[in-house]
Image 1 (tube, rainbow, N blue to C red):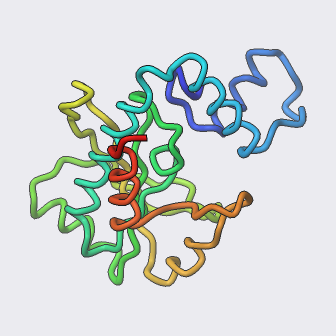
Image 2: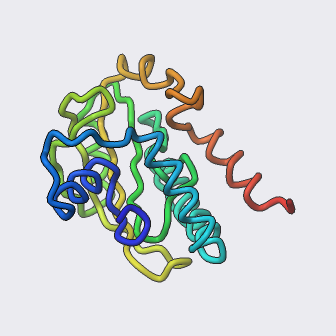
Image 3: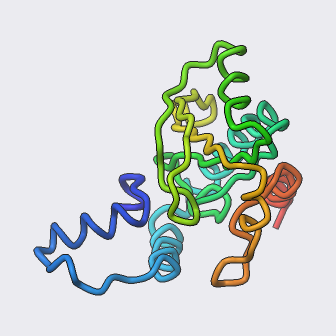
Length: 185
């Protein structure tokens, strides 16, 4: 469901429980375990297409991070961790002095977006400015979600995840990933 339908881990786990007819109290794998299985699945079934799809998504994320550079953007999720496919959305967290300034920037540039509230990386509600952007490389529209955080949230956002990896990357880090992806192995 994660790879073939583009579901995020939480919704995929909940749907699997429903489809299997299990109790809602059923113990579920943690996100690290799901990610490991997603990586295995991609390696077995998508090795010929996924690297190019990931590169296209990372390139699109880079473009939007450059557009929103004034708001300290960081890319996270599957695009950052390398498990994204053409069905994955792009999640960019922005850390703003004034949370409304990001929205004003989109309005000033005539960008159509949908504001909504989503669960943030600490379980809190944060505003997301969601838009659809056409990817030439993938020849389809991709969901881009600009999540708006206060500047003070940046400090906690950079703590390593349970595997010791940075949970998100800034413009320079994403550029390094793209350079690494394009260099010969």
